[in-house]
Length: 245
Ligand SMILES: Nc1ncnc2c1ncn2[C@@H]1O[C@H](COP(=O)(O)OP(=O)(O)OP(=O)(O)O)[C@@H](O)[C@H]1O
Image (spheres, helix red, strand yellow):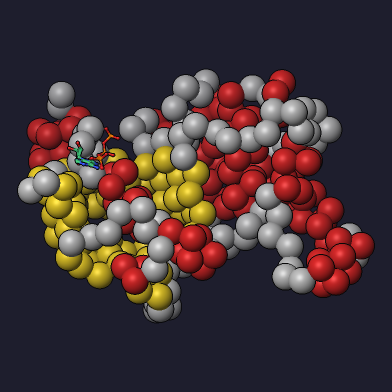
């Protein structure tokens, strides 16, 4: 079996004596799509913050491929190939969908290499591939301001894809979406995973079911249950602390 992309072992985060993460372990394989669910305050956001270097763990290992993330700052971690999508989109309203994607592109270093690359049409081809992948090709020349809520979220996911991340972290991607948009987002994340790994934190269980992959349930900073959506939904401990409320 290949080495995991993401490896958390025994991770704890303590805020003023309060354990937001408590001996948390999580392993994500290359190409895996993982859903993370759990009640409010379970530690989902803190876990994402630890992976991206925003929060330092007080104990435990956090590894991305062969990199020890506990020794790196946020900027260094981002350049390793970890992209994070927050709930609130940060697209540029005045620019078109195409221009937003172009702007997010990671061009080669150095002005000459960059110019040669731009002239080669490589940039345009990357934008077109991401338009296709996100289902936004028909909106390419529309300004971001007129997109629907769902389309803005997909554009933001597309902007992260332009950076060609190996691991994508998405925070509540379907909050506020219609059922149809939610289904489109599930299909998009399933497509994205395979060539990259994706960790999605979400409360919407219909969406998690539509993802159809392994689910991790967090509670009080550690893993309460893990497995298929049917497995975790039928786990009495999950019903007691999360689903039964
Ligand atoms: N900077 C901080 N200082 C003190 N406590 C914090 C801090 N950040 C988070 N916490 C606490 O840690 C716990 C875990 O919070 P976290 O935001 O990770 O949970 P969550 O699972 O993402 O919850 P939600 O579903 O509500 O977003 C919460 O009790 C929260 O109040």
